[in-house]
Image (cartoon, rainbow, N blue to C red; front, side):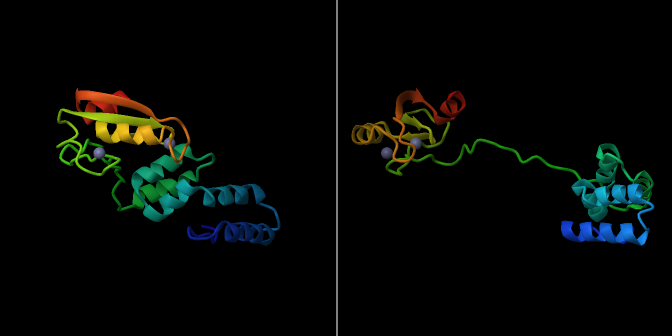
Length: 168
Ligand SMILES: [Zn+2]
Ligand SMILES: [Zn+2]
């Protein structure tokens, strides 16, 4: 389109825009301004590249001065399928064995198994540890070595890590 292509850098686009303006003796600057705007629009550039019908449709709706004729032609001619985005599922990793933040040994058989543990909390986040490890740690370091905040210690008995994750 007007000698632009989707792979131009922003500097190349700007230079091309200036070239076009002088080529047409500044007579169609408004039109050229639109074209320049299109070629700087990431969604439009993506549509040129991937030709996906829903991306083209999105351009028609979202662009300030969409090149409707071009977009409609692209929509008619494209043979590409619509882009579908799949959301990656976040699921609790129930099978893995959580380990103690302080000694590294197993803390529970899984995050849903009932156990006693300590929750250490500071500005850096929260960590889980054996109650004995946590008590020993806190008596030597009441403040976090990184954020310097006093570590909040909670002993949680007869519960599971999964519940605690949701609660705090
Ligand atoms: Zn431990
Ligand atoms: Zn911290």
